[in-house]
Length: 144
Ligand code: DHK
Image (cartoon, rainbow, N blue to C red; front, side, top):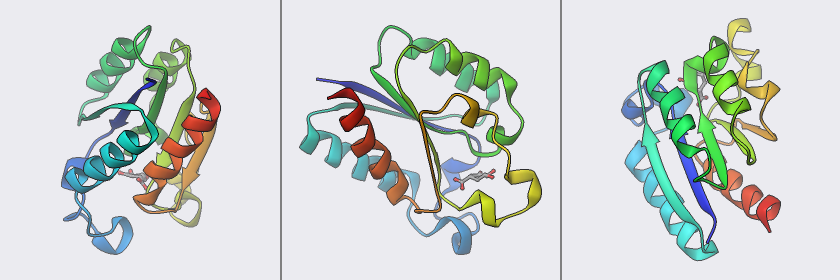
């Protein structure tokens, strides 16, 4: 059974409360439940985590090495700033899918560059929280 680590960056713990006009009304727990349900349907073992700290995300990526078959990551604001997360992902052997709930390309100029995209095998932006399930389906294809 493929092992998928789904990692979420800063402020996503407040999903559902933070700027719902941009990020929607679903909570991160709702996203986790939906991912676990789809994972079960597709025969995937899902680990789901959120971290407000850059180093915490780096350590979770290290922990995925040699353990997870694929990573789905919404690095949130660290997408636009973090060479450390890019470097950590470059040490991960499997496919990496980058997810943004909002369409970062329609937003402020500073959101339109993501360091993580230099490593990601696919980038999903603007599909809302459905983007996580799209990422799971794409990983299933890549790992088949
Ligand atoms: C989430 C954030 O927290 C922002 O900092 C990013 C991303 C966009 C999202 O759309 O999921 O710029």
